[in-house]
Image (cartoon, rainbow, N blue to C red; front, top):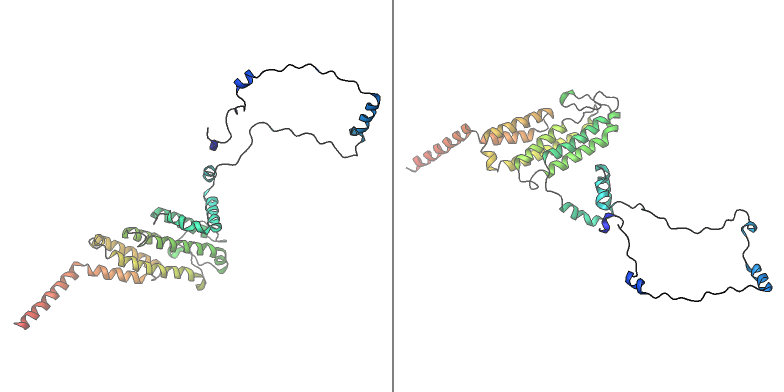
Length: 305
């Protein structure tokens, strides 16, 4: 049995082989006869003996000889088993603390990460952080449930102070997840659009506050998402599979218009960009452009003739 299984099983072999002990001769000696002590030797021996326990000072005890403990003793878990028994939060905090203590392993750790995650992973993390915002709202009808759109009530300054750290954590996580899901981190235009759609929908569910300055961080995040939408739209317009599907372009334009309405016009720039691209792919617009080019070339030919 290997050492990793715990303690050693079985019995330890003796140092001497049984054959050697069997053939060793037994030496027989004559028993020694004890000699009686003389009276003067008896007196000197009694004077050199230690004092009895009754003559010791009060509170002083004679130390007893310690005996070895028998049986199986406890031992710590192996590394793999200790990691297996840790919950998610404890594992995350331990890993971050380890990276802080040893910064040289950060590059190796990041090299082992996948380039991008799935849409469900992003939504799960963001949904948990959004629920944490509503869970910390004080004395509100929104506490414990997310309400999006115009149904959100205007919260006061005290509520903003209570949930500011949760709001900042959600917005930072949202931007990090979106940036990881766009080119060149990922080469799927459809995946980038789906992540942007889910992130914009979750951003609209962040509660609004009565003081305009308390909505500053949410508005800045909308501006950042608008620029990311424009970048992704420019990327997907170069994809032949996206441009050959007019119905898909119309669907995404409708989705973006809905997000723009929920954000009170903060996504107007990407909406206009996608609408311009949609008009360029319109068959009637293409036919009009072709007829205009043909008319222009015929006029040039007539002038030459």
